[in-house]
Length: 154
Image (cartoon, rainbow, N blue to C red; front, side, top):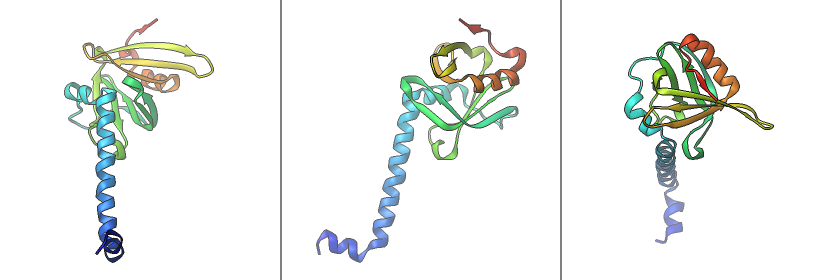
């Protein structure tokens, strides 16, 4: 029996094997993004252990270290304790929710030609992992953090 005959005689097995392969590859890619972006390093220090209580907004975008893009898959939030970061379920593997204390965050704002304002949140004093978000997202976070929001660097 050759390979094509085996596939013709066992189509369900092919579907199962492809599904397993697809899930494995998806998890591998998401794990690589976690390492490249710095999320994995942040999770060692700032993993959220309880439920987040505060203002949050889903379907947000951000860019972290080495141009790792999280397009429309972030939930960003803020309370008096810190910045909340989480990913949507499909990208959750190796991306546990984070709560980074405000004392561990530096903020800088930059006007980008044709793109508007972008804000870079540098997470972790020693780690210094950048998270670039839109000015609109930063305004929502700043309003939720109120007086705890870090002084913006110029």
